[in-house]
Length: 128
Image 1: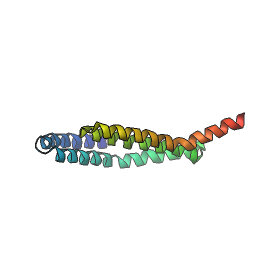
Image 2: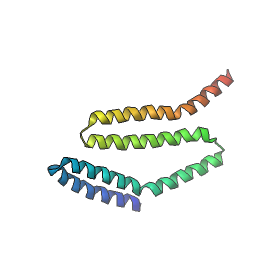
Image 3: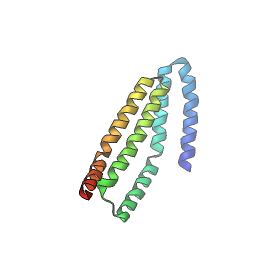
């Protein structure tokens, strides 16, 4: 809960400064918004590490093979990075670049999941 309050405080302070900066120098306002976004994300790294550790423990307990779970975790990371990057581009009024990032994220997400689809296809072939 501490992390959320710290992130909210940092975001609100950053927002106020960004709004003031954008009036005079929009470029600096965008850079400040990018910096604040990165700082908020860095606040969450410890929580993400704990969540990932818990997930890996559960995977070990369930006896799931790594090649089944790894694509799901990677796809989640791709989605998070894509969302943050596209939102930053939209904030800078670059919707074309944001759309390009979202398309690239979708393609990369599909690519990362290919091994999972391949194992599913192999399983279906073995049943036939």
